[in-house]
Length: 146
Image (cartoon, rainbow, N blue to C red; front, top):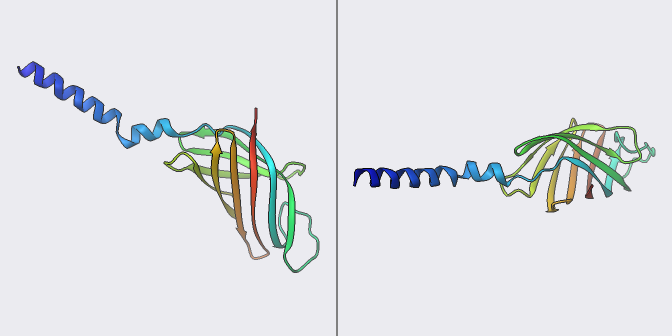
């Protein structure tokens, strides 16, 4: 009888540990590694690092192709870079995937990103940048290249 109770308790404890949120979360994060490319639309004001300076003092509506690269990922944390697809500048980014497995927060040296995965190889990535010299807000529709 004691052996049976011990075995039952051991099975229940094993199940509880395996089903804990931490254990489930480790398996829930999507693999983001790779090259993501797609069109983006933004509104800028002032001198920004990726776009050519137009000399305009008011807001400028811009469109272009963007590349986002994830080169390293451990669980929900990752590193990579982003820049205009035809540009030479690539800014490093740090990011995390939220527990829902779809919402992504990122930061580079002068702004933040919020991205939503709409599929295993598709995401919408929006950026906000505020510096003493510029303001920018925009979104990109990115597809992972396989």
